[in-house]
Length: 307
View 1 (tube, rainbow, N blue to C red):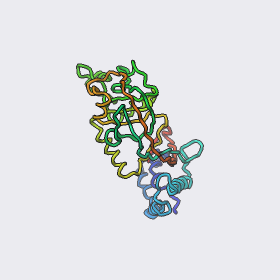
View 2: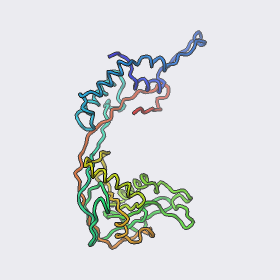
View 3: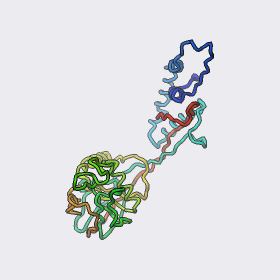
């Protein structure tokens, strides 16, 4: 292998402005040489081919996350950085950033309230595991807490099953009560709003969340149905075991639990017994990022991340 900077090191080198040139008075009138062309000339087809063919070879077994081939792949990258004398980004010299992952399997079990038993995949969908029984269900309206509005003044959700709905409150003049304008806040956004509500309820100690979003229920269900057909699970960052379980419910299930859920947002206790028994066998995966760092000489406090 030729002793030349590969493409990644070259890009970082140029981006960080790590070469400094002192121009003497006698050289001031000489044409400037484009450093991009200079260093681009050091990249050869044979060198790129060698790296690519090695990394894509059967030796790395497809580099599947968490498997032996992936471990070989990250060690190969580490050795290349060491060969080029590019230090690790971490102060302790470790090139590896641990990434805790898990393969989430669909749970098995049921949700019931009184004489009604709800069917997973039809009445509700979830990727969570939780077991809880309670003689009351807490309705927390939109599940919002902000400077100008809160749903939690009159209720305590610690250790409870909490029913909330998508969106945020609107005043009589059609302005949004959180923003005070005609523009909705992030509480109304599908992904960001749900994440904020789930995080808030977890912080308040809720055990499980029944989330009602009739506009987007079909989107959640498509993801659930896909996993049901493939039965392969869904890989993602390992979730905090203390997070409140999230259960997305259908319009019919929401109406049976709280018939006035579409019209009313006032937080209240519902005399609805709730029994949730859901369990899944999630698989824990250990994986790593490989992180090296070239410090800029002119602006060492600025960073360019190439991933």
